[in-house]
Image (cartoon, rainbow, N blue to C red; front, side, top):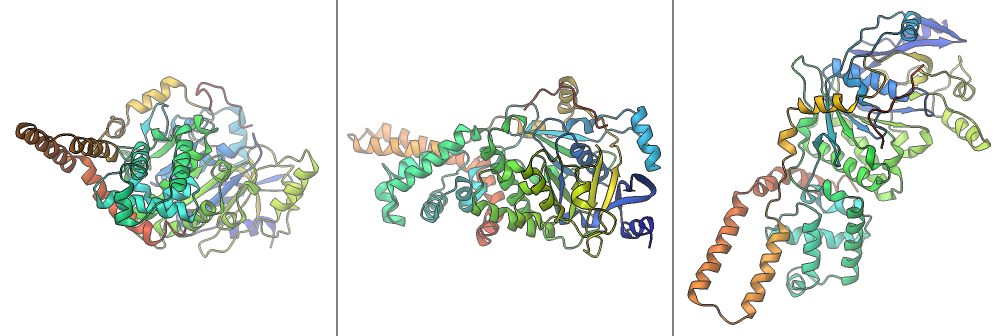
Amino acid sequence: MTFEEKIIQSYTFKGETICLGAAINEGKVYGDSKVYLPLKTMNRHGLIAGATGTGKTKTLQLIAEGLSKASIPVLMMDIKGDLSGIGASGTLNDKIKERCDLLKINYTPEATPIEFLTLSNEPGTKLRATVLEFGPVLFSKILGLNDTQSSIVSMIFKYCDDHHLPLLDLKDIIRVLQYLTNEGKDEIKAEYGNISTQSTGTILRKIVELQQQKAEMFFGEKSFEVDDLMRYNDEGKGMVSIVRVTDLQDRPKLFSTFMLQMLAELYAILPEAGDLDKPKLVLFLDEAHLIFQDAGSALLQQLETIIKLIRSKGVGIFFITQNPNDIPQSILGQLGLKVQHALRAFTAKDREDIVKVSKNFPDTAFYKTDDLITKMGIGEALITLLNEKGIPTELVHTMICPPCGRMDVLNNDEIQSIINQSKIINKYNQVIDEISAYELLNQKIQNIKEEQEPKTTPTAERSKQKTEKSTLDSILSSSITKQVGRTAASIVTRTLLGVLGFGGSSTRKKKGWF
């Protein structure tokens, strides 16, 4: 069987597909030997890797555009601030025309419907979650607590649940810790047992560390609902939600905190889907090494397990990074699609790493993989994926199709125009500060102090009772009661599974693809 026949056979599928490009062998582009990505196996996850400037972002953009056209919503983490161009139509120039001629395809400039989300003060729809929604197990894993400290966090969550103290933001759980080690020490000891002051001090320091990375912007109300990640525009295209996190590169703890909570929430809420013809949602995690940076074994196990199980919910996860060695081997082995752009060898260690990377791919009679990885041009990649039967396809050197969107970033005015058209921004960007554990404990401490003072007059007593009743009524009528109900099922799910076990300016000119 010839090279061309082998590629056509290996990349022909029955269901819907996305055209990634055409095969290359010995310097020749085989325009009739197209390399397709089947939507049916997109929930088997994937990897897009390569050195800076080799075309990773454009490949990500191409796949995201294809998913949106196929009515599949997309969530993208924009660390470098270079993904917004997908929201504007591209421009046909001589280099794109030359590439399209080689690939034997037509180029149609087209914008993709996008939504800007943010974890910080950047413009966009705010992403938030409550401490309650994390649950004690996940919250402990994020803080990096040992078993003893984790058990104390579980006790605190139980205490707050029993005493109707909503945990919304970080100041709530800090206030609870302070109360239980001071005024409430005897109360917690009588109901749940003694807790170590040293352990609670460690937990407080860990939470302060999160606060120093400005995590308080993420914890609180109104909680973002994952259903709003799976929306469509009026034409039926899947919305591409871009999380703008360009100012979080030096705050990996906050970035990984968000990702873990989002994955856990998706797993807890989405029903089992089985084998679908196409996924419900696909996540692209750019600069994925930030997720694993300083991550302990507990967090890695958490991620590995979620990645294994979330595919059954119809969710695909793609990691984008410079070197595949940035991804732990236990997780790399779960990634069915591998798109490897060029790597550069400047040192002996670089050459050793490239040899290791080449061993991640199937054997091939057509290429010397470790040598080819260093010689591919911009916009070219080695590709292998899982076919509809779950069997790896033939490794193929591919010339990637140009994306239909702009190969550059949007300017500030264009970004603001898209934000102004958002249908969900008013839902989440209002400031909400409900009565929660912080206020209730402060009131409780005040009541204790008043009880220790001389008895009040009957009139004052009636006034006090009226105030307490008003506080209770406001709690019961607030959105917190609804919030607790909304998150109860997901928390139970995470508990039973042990949570499954467990910057730059947008006007900056970007370098061209070619």
